[in-house]
Image (tube, rainbow, N blue to C red; front, side, top):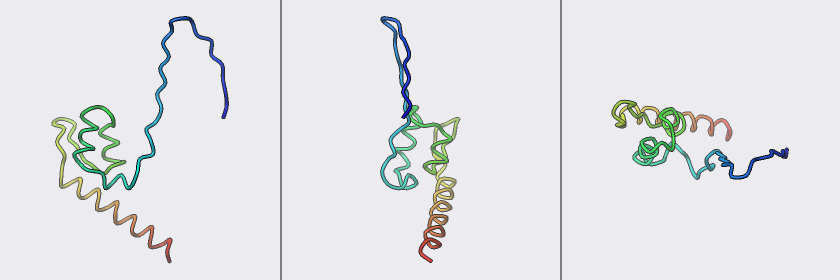
Length: 89
């Protein structure tokens, strides 16, 4: 890991932002309402909810599109089954 030195002035404020934790389990099985809660509270973006958790949320109303969410999650599960099947073959 590369180290660096950065001189700072007295009374300066330093803010460090890091990525979230790796999580536990399949993100596509995460509770839909928990994902919505994270979007509404600014912990994750609408794009992340869709791409990383398979939850479609309206940018206007913050409501979950249940039909689209089910479609996304089913597609992901099918792709994982095909991938795992290939690994075991």
